[in-house]
Image 1: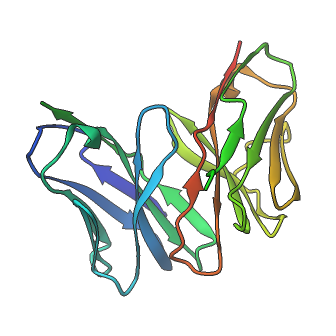
Image 2: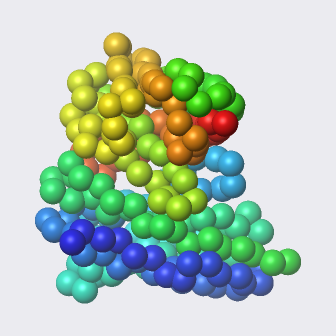
Length: 112
Length: 115
């Protein structure tokens, strides 16, 4: 069964700290994996996109990793800021990118 | 760049009424997606178009839902008749789909409440 699972479901950290969000998937054939940030009341915004051959991709303080062998991805946030409070959604495309599955998201709260 | 524009931002209507949601994709993008987001089910892809042609509508919940894209700059998602379980946030997104690594750009959604 094609699935995308994210953990943790929610996370609270102090401003300035680092954190790592996890995404495990079981889809085939894999096409690409994307991380989105969704602020409350807004649409998701793309952070990173990785294809099969990419292991790491950065976007400012956000760094995504992909292990295609274990079918795991992580999103690492460095030196968190209050504006990082949002839901982070892992999205996996498969079958020549014609199919797409969304994870249920991780709700991240940054406390001052 | 204006981004993806959706209207209305909020819609409240009684069950049984027809609801039409509108989307203007980013100019030059050739793929358009309609999504629904609820607390229980998260984000779900309903249908997507490529070059104005519906490619995959397997996510459309039932015949009460229909989507059209009459030209490259406009799309509608219609629910007729609406039911309370259709209450959700509906997102439209567009992308330039010549490469697999192109991101989708989302609008800010229409929050739909069916009473």
